[in-house]
Image (cartoon, rainbow, N blue to C red; front, top):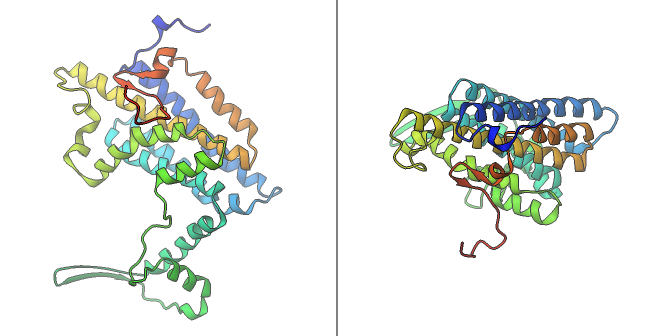
Length: 299
């Protein structure tokens, strides 16, 4: 028997965060189940693209598990940094499943040239040069595919192109939204809820060191209780957004590489999240969560 709305946990409480943490944990476990399932199924149902991207999928579980460990140990700032990595991997993976052959090949070639270039690295500050160099030898003449990769990621001015994709994450989502039937809204929410704050944390700004306590979005928090409630709200948003992004991943994979049982588990995980009453689905504490097809419309 489900509880009435008055009995449900409230946003910003320990109980609310705990329930979302359990939801996220179940979603995270699906990543492990997914890569194990693919490993077995690829033996009898070959899929070149799914196979070549297997390690990217495999890495998602480790990253997702790391987020869970950090959250469980109240390392919220660090959890956001890892959450950004997980979010990028999810979006990259989905995009690579559906993108054209040119973008897919660029992703693979980027790894080849990056591995080669890392054999000799240096930076210069003033007159001081620091260098890391592999002592072995590798002739590009004997590796035409590697030479092709290096040429592809070298600009006309001879500088290294440092990103495999010519598109940013929003452009990738736009392509997915226009050319597939995948619901990109959870991935958009993930970017809004996680990406910018995580970037600030990674870059070591003052904002990035203390945003998680909510002082920039909740005004003047005067009491310990208010601060704790704000932190729980931040964590709940993080866990909900990541769980929803993992759900989007299962949808995307299911279209290419059928995973009906895993897909159903993801839907059931959300249905079992009874902490989300109807009001909470559209109103997250002080956050209004919604989508508008006309961003210029006043409101």
